[in-house]
Length: 548
Ligand code: F6P
Image (cartoon, rainbow, N blue to C red; front, side):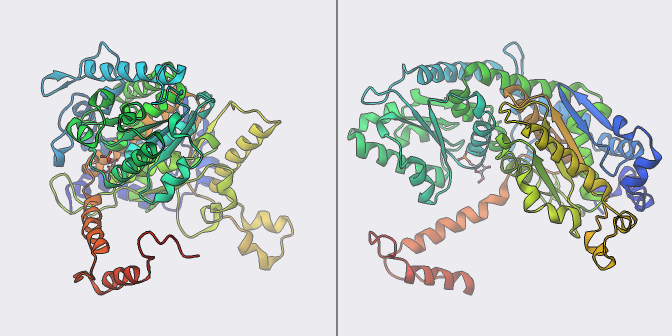
């Protein structure tokens, strides 16, 4: 047994889960008048209703005891104080410094990093203003109308999610596109209708060594120069966001056109660093500042609010309950907001790259489940595709519903209809529809099993007044810190990502085998060898173009 599962607090939770197995949400609501008003938490304009989770106040007390036994309060301080809590990479984890006010002091190796953060923010703000008001022109003197951000993973998902989420606040006279996939289709489709003379590329890569990003950046440079004809055009059409100045220079981008960040910012925690340059150009430096203020407000809330009312702690601990004591393998994130259409994809990297680990900080194999699979789609679209499984499938899928009181796009009564659906889904999942009710409705007996909803399916509902930059900052930081809470309890390194390395190195080897002029000797397994041979045999000759 591991240290975690040996803890008395863990074992108390196991016994508690066992004892409560038969207690349904229907029972709980019947026995606890006012449960829906009590099992809620509110802070910073976010309202979290967790009454439809399969928890009681006793469950939450036990979860808090577990968190304290696992050292959560001290680990929070360690993060905020710049300790090297990313143990396997020997790095501090300081995304909280990215949104710290100017007068804060956060030390990494004895150096206050806050002035460095604000120097980059000032550089970004100056550049963004010049692009937005037309003072920054392209090589031919034309104004920049199109911004194409090139990056992948944390250097893409945050910017694209934030752009979509804050589209309402964006410069509508500009075009923003995002290129991530090494599939040339991504680059081609993103640029096919753009004028190179009006296009600015932001090459985003923490390491500036990611093959997908560098391939797309090279394609962008060739596309640009083919139209503009002159190598000096690069200076006006390319800027870089990276931690590695030498590689940026080697690529041919002037370090004067580089926006830096630091190794203590994890890729998936970087959307509020210079990686968010496209966001700042889209919404302007002031609105970007409001987003940072939202992040910071949640940081302060997380650091200083008692666990009973601490929103990230509550969300993280309820997630532990669902994963480890109710056996749920997944979480569905269901924003009832079209602007949040990329939020589930963003959360997938944040949660799964952070907590998809099987060994503890000291390298022992865990004997409990760690990070669940996150996925989702905006409501109401999901209702007409996968909600069937949520309601009647054999798996337990806890849901996070996210909704906003006001819409920026009032169309008739549609916002009420949207929110009615959100509320209805939580209710249907929790309480279902039983045999007696169906019989009372004269449903044919043979159909009753098919039309029964057993209910007792847990969900949380997060409400905010309006989706604006400040609220987006709150929301992202809320999930960031809930991931942290879970990583602390699971005793894993939430800030490394060694699991992506093997595929990368095999792809390099296989790439050489695909490029070899003569059939290479393949030393993979028989399946991989056969796939490579088939591909080599059937692909069109270079330059021949696709088959008709
Ligand atoms: O392969 C995973 C990963 O390292 C992510 O953690 C990161 O966000 C992404 O690749 C991109 O890395 P970079 O910003 O260095 O190009």
